[in-house]
Image (cartoon, rainbow, N blue to C red):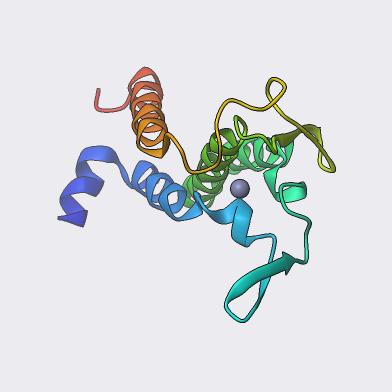
Length: 141
Ligand SMILES: [Zn+2]
């Protein structure tokens, strides 16, 4: 099955998609959280700072595009997975650091919605967006 999909989609696309799938939660666990009594007590990197900075992942994406090959595909996948997570966090009241890694900015006065709401809608929207970008880039032609 994987070999048939690799022939249909191309190995670089499969690598990017697989890595992106596993990188969607990367910005949160890259903060290196620590727990007390099974409850998250904090993290070594402050929540929603450096790991949620879109410019960092944009640099990784550009570097991956420059690198090319399977490593570049993996880097693009990591960046796209992380960006998906960050764009999902952006409408929350806490906001994300759009411009500078230590300064979060929320959308509107209260944000648009709380974390965890509208996840099925966002997953479908990001999947549709990814499909459209892949087709526009010449996928399956
Ligand atoms: Zn997050």
